[in-house]
Length: 162
Image (cartoon, rainbow, N blue to C red; front, side):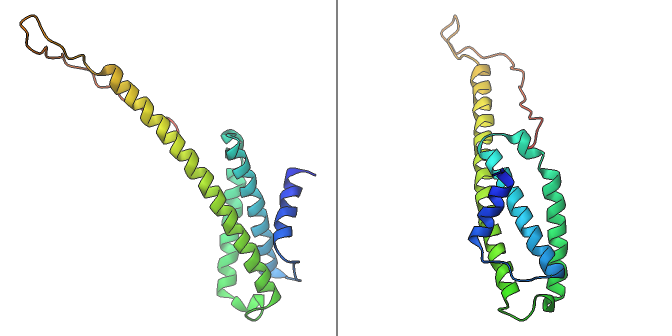
């Protein structure tokens, strides 16, 4: 079973059987499932430290998120498209949305953890640079502290946004 098919089966196993939904409701359900699959894949890649592979998914993720946002706005304006409150279509979309939120929470945890690790590395490199460039304080020939000469400042620059 391929990774994408396996993930789709994981999502469908956690929500009830889909009722017959048409129009924007069906589009929202499909987009939610697609985004869930894509974000789970990105989370899997990030947890394996394959950031370059995860970065390749950003274009598709941004496109799906824009479609999701637009479809959700259409449904918020036309609430009647999903039927009455408590209808099977609404319950199904609610289940999909709840599962999507769980996936987003897991993704955010991974991203924050990786960000903290990267920031820790940058901080430790900066501290090492400071230690290396710190002047040695000692005594001079007349038993007074030697004044260190002017030290050139060292800059630390990242060429990538974390």
